[in-house]
Image 1 (cartoon, rainbow, N blue to C red):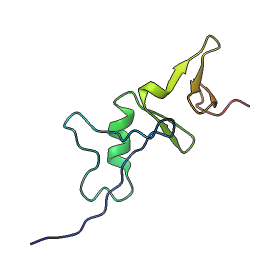
Image 2 (spheres, rainbow, N blue to C red):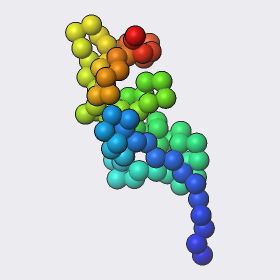
Image 3 (tube, rainbow, N blue to C red):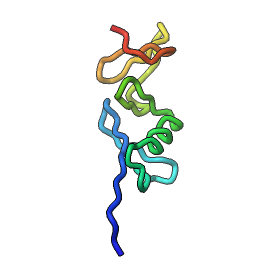
Length: 84
């Protein structure tokens, strides 16, 4: 039998890379809201700022303890809020 399921994937807002966990899965069956795959990404050095996700290649910490992302945004390392 074939059965359709819904799941979510995590895509880097900096470069478009899809997150794959340690077993090379990019989504989990019946993870309709994406909570499980998102937690797996965050446990794997991905970052979430606001509603955006960034792979390890698309952010760095600067001398002022801010995260700078490839799309030009700056985020406070403590609060993870955008610095304007």
